[in-house]
Image: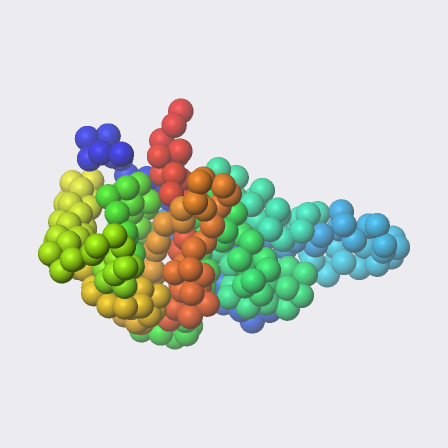
Length: 301
């Protein structure tokens, strides 16, 4: 994607999983504020998994599961309306298991929000099961809500980039910053350990690689400024030996950390990658994972 054909991506409806856990409740309130900022609908989804449960549960049990799910959705919607009385909210009691239910509810344009810990079922929204499954396989952006509820706002969104091709999803990070009236900070981590040991690596080679990373990061920032001329955009290259460590530290000073999700080597299946996996378990703020081709796919007729 080039600056000539880059357009502002549209932020879609927000879909959030509801399971009755404190973590999910925190995620719901975050998702409600996000939907309000976007001027979009909030979709509350409780995955009752009744299709699978029907194989071993009797009719009375199934009815009890559905009623409990409906009651939970009603209570959750009421809590949202207390904070956002004008927000359009829909309630969905899903028949599928959690990962499939959330992906289906999000469609092609929504953003999925999950908590970073859960109870069991959708109900077992432990990252490593449902949360990781959604983040690794969804074809839409996924936000894992982390950090303290009363954490002071920083007025910034941070995007963790690696290469020029990241412009695609980077524009979504810019849209998030624009919706918040916040600054966008583009950070690239240059980890020298990833280059040492390659074929006859010399100090001159490392210096050239570092300069190229600085140039590419600045070029990304310049392209974002072309699409969002009113947005405050900063760019910085951090040097260190632990990319997850540097980005985890950066997450303590921003309201949202955004990064792209690529595919496994040879293009086989989606993958979170080591860095994304570490961040959604240890970051100090919500982490948004964006499939690499999401924005360009959004522009297709």
